[in-house]
Image (cartoon, rainbow, N blue to C red; front, side, top):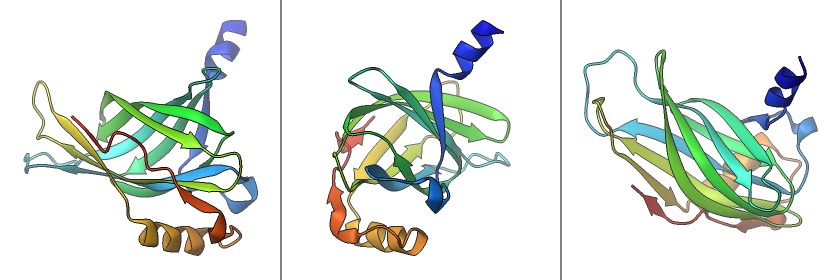
Length: 168
């Protein structure tokens, strides 16, 4: 029982779009999407199940549950430097993960826009290439944020687009 408690506490889980009452500053937000480069003939198209990141100072681990091929996300975390460690993709019941070294920083106050993360995957095969591109679509992102969470002051939004802009 003790071991089960430790394992459950290793990763803090977040929903991609939490209720407004659970959010606080500082926070990071952005958009994540996945698409397949070529048709595969499979019934299920790829979706992002979740992504995981780690705080570089202290090693705290976090998971954001997505469950879609395209989703806005916002997460309240403490200030500091973070690194995306894993993308978990799903096609029906099949799951696959990819290690993705994407870095970002959370300011001590306000909201940090991390960009639009566009993930292209090859058609299913024994091995698949994944390409992640980080784009800046600030106007669309702020509009989306304001519509979903009008309580945030958009004057406090800063761009902290995750780096590097392309990962293969």
